[in-house]
Amino acid sequence: MQLALPCLSYHCTTPSGDMAVWMYFLLTYFLNVQTSLAQTDAPAVFTPVYDHYRALDYQGNFVLGWSTNATDIDIEITARTTGYVGLGLSPTGTMTPADMVIGWIADGQMYLGDYYTREGDRTPYIDVSQDWIVQAGNEVNGTTVLRFSRKLRTCDVNDVNITASRMSVIWSYHESDPNVTSGLMPYHGPETRGSRDMYLINDDVVPKSYPPPNTFMIDIAHSEYVIPAVGSSLQCRVFQRGIIPAGNMIKYEPFITPGNEAYVYRMTLYRCSNISVDLAGQAFDCDEAPNDVKSCKTIVASWSMGAEAFHFPEGVGMSVGGPSDPNDYVLEIQYSKWQDTVGPDGTAVTIPDSSGLRVTYTTSAVQQQAGVLELGKVISAGWREFIPDGEAAFTTNAFCSPRCMNWGFSPEKSAISIFGVILKGNDVARDIKLRHFRGSNELPWIAVDTTFSNFFQAPRLLKNSVSVEATDTLSVQCTYNTMDRQGITRGGFSRVEEVCRATVMYYPAKQFDMCLSWSSFDQLKTKTGQLVNENEAVQYLQNVTTWDPDMKRLFKDALRDSSERTICSSIARLPAYAVDRYQHPATTSTYSETLPCY
Image 1 (cartoon, rainbow, N blue to C red):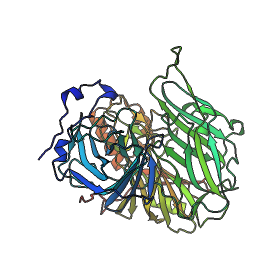
Image 2: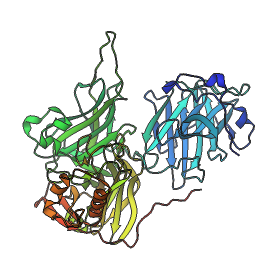
Image 3: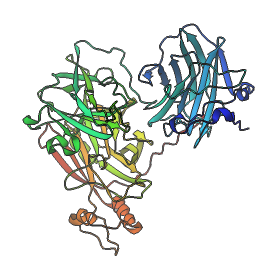
Image 4: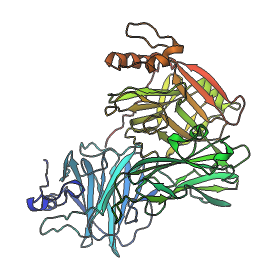
């Protein structure tokens, strides 16, 4: 039976937009339904027992704790209120549609209900299948604590499955409990609700022995950059050689100028060699920076809004500041501010920012030296991706071939263990997978994000490290949605271009920094069926003026059938790179992530 929770008409008539109200609904419906609410006596004391803790608001009034295993998630909400609290999962980060749980403490008992909203409708409906299980609840000194659990993947069509992809978590609370007598739940208000992108699986974990002896911190930040009043900005700053002393990086985290938390969307620290000395300390719009700044793209650390610190696993550290390490650094920060801030005189107010990344390193020895390997599509003056417009799901694949893997793993050829991954795309990227092949068999994906967002490119710490051998193939698969674009989208690092990359953190470190590929287009044909000369294929595509369905079909066929050229490179070894022509063999087994529900 479908249980709709109607609004009382005189409560539901409110201003539109962010102040629109889903806000009042009749409790009497679910208070009289045995399966729609669970309740429990509240214990007196709680102690931290969860793997992850995250404040979902900037003031720390709503803290989420959680742990996951192969089948279940356990959740704790700690909110500074004696009223109700709400938590939800939403594909859009908004109330519509959403899978929600709402709970509170009343007369020493915990009440918890499972709800959902429909597309375009903010009214919460009781879910006939009540899948959240009460564990415990408490209300002490103005704070409500609720603990409950659920299967990661239920068989309920109204539930959002909890996966390793980006999850948009919505939250709210109110100072009052629902009024059981009147049957009303008050609107939480615009200041006590929000949303946050995060990983509920593969999030950061603090090692048990952290911090080790001889641990230090250093801040790498912008200096009083003025955020534009409206719009998006991508800023890069160059740091001189030796800014990070010799040691092993074991953690990095953001520090953001107070008050600017809503404007700093993403920060990435790159390192390289041979940036001109006269550029040290200078700041640029990244799209207009000198070429040696633009080409500095070996990731050291990456953070996105919604993420917090990233700890390396127990006993693992990345060498920084040493004589053989690349010691030129570029800090890239993306700012977004979409509403005017107007001063008393009516002029737009700009905001200074000195945010950055805090690097924690130890001068003590570590058990395993970590390496970073950049995988994906080449971006160069001679070759860039072509992504046609009007495509709901256009897919490309980049490969690190077995020959390149063998080159990079030399001389000892021992396997590596991948423990962390950062998936990277731009505005039209929607789905990114890091695929793993052994011979003609595809193994489980190392990392996947089927809900990829350019604004959330945080590192993920794999629950279980993945062993990769020197003869394996790694592939980055990117799927784009260009329905809102006009004209070809080209590969590149600017905000209107696209990237298809995965940054892999692994141990033990090898002299292997990048493994990128590009299509040779040796099977590209004209509309008359004539094979285009491989050396002229890119120029031919650049001259295409009409990407009609036939042209798109020919282009997709060429991407599927052409050989891939792979370049594997190292900053620290000679020769510095090798190039391979690679044709991916037909797979005898393809991995499909079909996960059961419970």
